[in-house]
Amino acid sequence: MEEMESNKGCRRKRQHGGLVTMPFIFANEACEKLAVVGFSTNMISYLTTQLHMPLTKAANTLTNFGGTSSLTPLLGAFMADSYAGRFWTITVASIIYQIGMTSLTLSAILPHLKPPPCKLGEQVCQEADTRQLAILYASLLLGALGAGGIRPCVVAFGADQFDESDPKQTAKTWRYFNWYYFVMGVSILVAVTVLVYIQDNIGWGWGLGIPTIAMFLSIIAFIGGYPLYRNLDPAGSPFTRLLQVSVAAFRKRKLAMVSDPKLLYQNDELDAPISIGGKLLHTIHMKFLDKAAIVVEEDNFKQGQAPNLWRLNTVHRVEELKSIIRMGPIWAAGILLITAYAQQSTFSLQQAKSMDRHLTKSFQIPAGSMSVFTMTSMLTTIVFYDRIFVPVARKFTGLERGISFLHRMGIGFVISILATLVAGFVEIKRKQVASSHGLINSHQPIPIPVFWLVPQYSLHGIAEAFMSIGHLEFFYDQAPESMRSTAMALFWTAISVGNYASTLLVTLVHKFSAGSDGSNWLPDDNLNKGKLEYFYWLITLLQVANLIYYLICAKMYTFKPIQANIKEISDSKESGVELAIKV
Picture 1 (cartoon, helix red, strand yellow):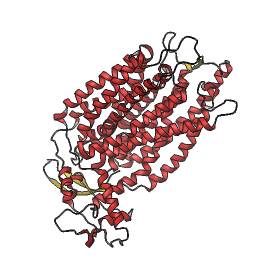
Picture 2 (picture 1 turned 180 degrees about the vertical axis):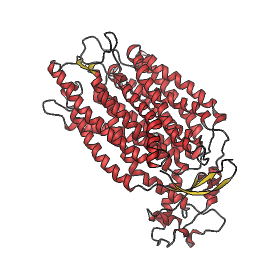
Picture 3 (picture 1 turned 120 degrees about the vertical axis):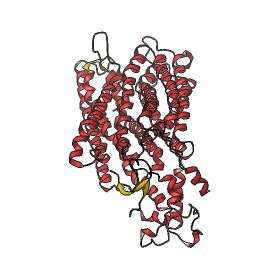
Picture 4 (picture 1 turned 90 degrees about the vertical axis):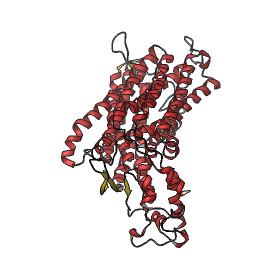
């Protein structure tokens, strides 16, 4: 079994890769984001106006869809790292996604797949029936499954195109994440402007049909780039290796720890397929796991033969598990930022719908396009960070990336706190104007410019440019090299849990803030009657507590130590090794 794993884990390296592959890879990610965001950004409007869902049910459907779409990357990452490889996982997932988008588009076009339009003056519109909702949820599920294969693999597959062991390309790998997020941001910007405008003013058939066609073209483009890719074969199931270490350590839990870590089992030949970029070195933390690498007589270990990995593991494999465990607290810190960010597509959007969105007498900004300010500020911050901030910071810190990804994430957390704090004060202003014009009990637009919402949208964009890209860098850099698709899945899983946390928070607040007189912080029918500012400030307080937690975790975090294999400039043979603790 061990030999099979070793053979299966052998990776073949193509001589291609590099910048020439980026258009094919980015095209796939851009179209996936165009499809997801083009729908989810304005989904609250689709569910309430086309399917006639109540506001809280629609908000929870939206966050549940976002949560599921960010949870399925665990499945996609497992398939990519264990069996199919990243290229084929992306390809199959894209096809599944295409089927889901086609189904969703048809449900928006065909009249019998959605409830009839509201009649003029009708107070309660007919909700979508069970059959219509089943088609909606099935389409969303296919989209979520497709996204699960695309999201974790596209990021890692793109980074794979740069050979980390080549000194010429090392800097390009970390800079790639800025490029990736910039391309993703541009596609989102197009979605929240062009597509949302089409959905609101031309129709949902075209609004969903365009990204469906774009996704189809991106699949063709991605497959067409196959001869150029630097493709790495899967190195065997990472979850199996983690489980083997856990089982071996448990079996030897009663053993005394060896006096010298050099006595722990190491096998460079066995670990070669999963340590191409370098071997993980022993760390003093979590010593109970080191017992998995203690050689005892019961192991029946013979020199020159692969051991039974359910009884004996190498130091490198033990350190893989330690790396994943160490990443856990930092991973958890990112959840609440997503919970705060999720409100833009639910309650912030409802705020925008109630305000004056006119640019001219005949043109008004679609409420769903307000996130253009988030995207614009994010893209501007990325350019500023890459071109100005990093070179200046590098002079003071000596780090090639300017500041560590942990510092970058911390800055993002602080800015996110400001975003929700400001959002609460803007809501107070909005309701004051509504009250002064006697519109508290009305659904008529309030005569206050929608641009009052720009600060909170923009701050969320700046926070994302710092925190989310820092989070992405952290997972790719600190994860074991054979688990990088899995690490990218952890990034999306944090987004998933953040969306589910938003659903839970909205549900609890809606339940426990309900008054006997029918009042509620988050009313179903009219935000003017609610206390949305209290909800925003509750999230602010939670984020302050989260920041304190993050600072403690970051202070205690131990970077993975790696004995890196360095290539000569001539790209001939391995020239030596160096101890590199990546920051």
